[in-house]
Length: 78
Image 1 (cartoon, helix red, strand yellow):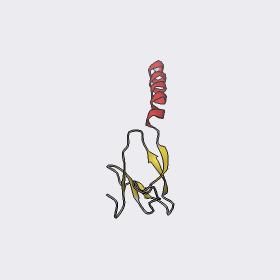
Image 2 (tube, helix red, strand yellow; image 1 turned 180 degrees about the vertical axis):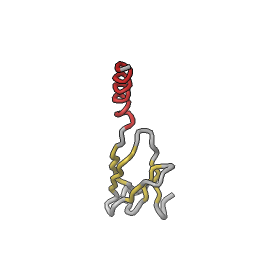
Image 3 (cartoon, rainbow, N blue to C red; image 1 turned 60 degrees about the horizontal axis):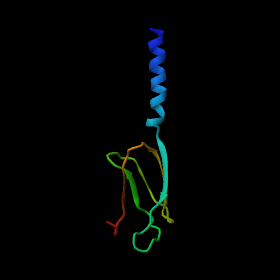
């Protein structure tokens, strides 16, 4: 029984890095003129978690899992 518990703990420790949350940082730029887009909404799809880009277009978003999809929207930008 103890070997089973040790094995299951070992297997869980291997899976943990694959499911670890990450911090995503970047900048939102206009497609045409490459200027920063301020106040763009960056959301993790199918959640209520997100952030807004700063005046220089940069953003940082915690709690992103591998495989998550980010959605970026801004008034005036499709």
